[in-house]
Image 1: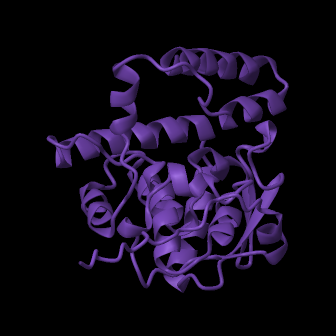
Image 2 (image 1 turned 30 degrees about the vertical axis):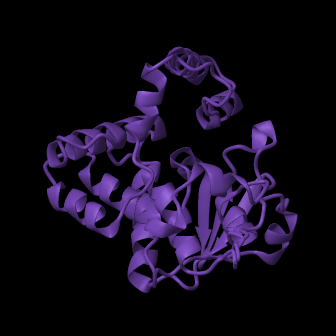
Length: 253
């Protein structure tokens, strides 16, 4: 079950951090819970609690609740802002570099063959100067913290804030919600499926169509990074094209 896997994963990460090698820690942290057996009832409910979008309105409400009093608030604000702009998985920020306007990311799913190569590159040229500064500030601040502690601290802080803002909501924003919103924004602003897949590190163009935020919740007029052409060409195109419903001619007597 997913809950059992999380416990085993946390224990293994703790052990390997103190006994090495470092590569094992990086491998374990990037691994997801795909393939775990589903617990009847409870597992589905848990999945529904994670919101598959992070609208500008929701993000603004969260940011308005952050202050300098909590240790993780500044980092959380920059994390959410940067993630909506780039679409990175939370764990991928541990292995990311920025040179000029090119963001180089070590793909999180590369170890199990579900990514588009070992790394991907995002051209941040279309991004505003303010947002580019936010990404730089986030990466600098994050580098000064133990990644696992920062991740858990920001995740917990976001959960508590979200519960206080929306006590009756069934699903609440998570750090991963920003990645869902990125996919929706990219689709809403006209990017093709293979371009979205390249930006998100997917091996095929089908993943984002079935597991991520939909175009309908995307924010138009949002600047989206550009993928590298060679990475777009590597994406396997297997998604079925959208076909409009067949019109039935009325019966004439």
